[in-house]
Image 1 (cartoon, rainbow, N blue to C red):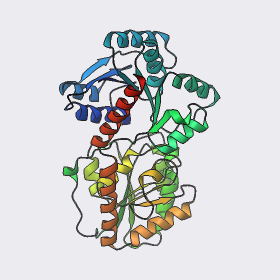
Image 2 (image 1 turned 135 degrees about the vertical axis):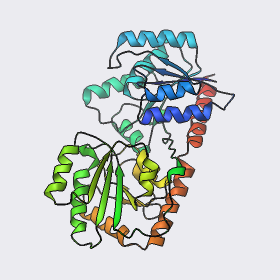
Image 3 (image 1 turned 45 degrees about the vertical axis):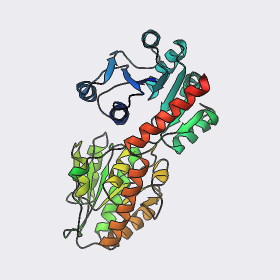
Image 4 (image 1 turned 90 degrees about the vertical axis):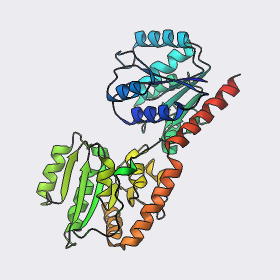
Length: 365
């Protein structure tokens, strides 16, 4: 079975990591011929994969929708390559890749919505047209699929859920054997943008610190447009010494092992790789009940879900976790780790995709 994954870029990010993990699984599968077609530029991930023997073609074209010449180039490439399956990921890859795959007569064409779609009327029509060229549309969570269907971009019978794969280097994780003596530390890994609700989280940290003698701390990993505003807020609330902005980091496993709990109070989440990483690291987690996290966490069993619009709810859950005995927190974190490793491993992701590809090919015969 020859598979071509089409993506907009191959530098860094969620899609790039999914393709990277897929290659590592399919690279040892003799029944699969796996290729990667990059519409725009390559980068760090592209170079890493090439060194490991991945078959990558980089077109280095403008990916903005619509690019008719790009569709022609992809069509020519696919007619020459003759894949059994084309799997596109991301808006630009879906639009140009699915149309081209249809024009090239590829037997199985699969699109993938990689985030929570929030399309205005013009874009709804664009993607309604785009998905006409697909035999199947993957959503990275049931919430994403439900949104696609509610926008009438695709019929439900044409959709399926395949959760993102997540891998974390457990060698960087040092398991805690006793509670920290110098307070309680939450960690969040995300883009610093309004939808992540960091402003609300910082306000709750300020509230909680007014009643806890040892101190409650927050490590913020990531960058974004809100960084300056959020740092000013910490100064205004007089908690600059309680909140640390760490920027982009590669040592995520080590940072997670240095925290007591993970928190993600976003207003919207399509999935959340960072949440699954924290679970795989054995951290107890609090996350939004909006979107993907509500499918990842079993409330009260493998973590806690909160209403991101209710800061009182967020504060209550954070206090409950802070006051929970260390051994109980450890049990919660271990349950989270067990569940995450079972449901979101790269091996399960690759197997789920292979089963989908095979079933669609069989149906198309």
